[in-house]
Length: 218
Image (cartoon, rainbow, N blue to C red; front, side, top):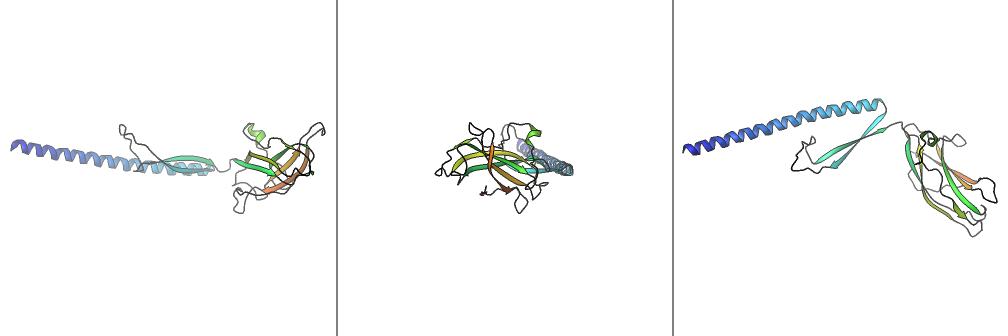
């Protein structure tokens, strides 16, 4: 009977100890969560004051049973933060598919399309490429051979260009994308010639970058 009483007392003591550990762990998580939320709010306010935008993404977390880490969110998802500067220039991808109805309007030779960003029609080109001095930017397509005959209707480029555009928060609705069709110099031409140009608005009606598939007349 005495042995049974001791075992019962030991079980109650272990249960109290376990409950105390669980309670202290819960209090510790709540304290850490409050401190994390306060630090997050301070970080957001500091970044917003200098023109930064914090983007939050949720991703799944694989928990290692041998190394159980405390998850402040209380679940199996963790937050990933990314800072995007409000006024910083943005990368802009432009897809050039083809140019139609060239026929004999353009002579025989190598053709290419140059894409540039202007502040307005007839204005100045916004050239961030020279300032960055990076080989990543690509404003002109690779040369394509055009036969110069009436039957040569379509010239396919199927190429992606990479430009640097002003942030949509500071961009003006008058800004445009200009496409220029060049006939490159050869034995028949001593210099590159522009045979056509067309423009397309950089921003849409919601003052965001245009993302639609569209056609531009040259």
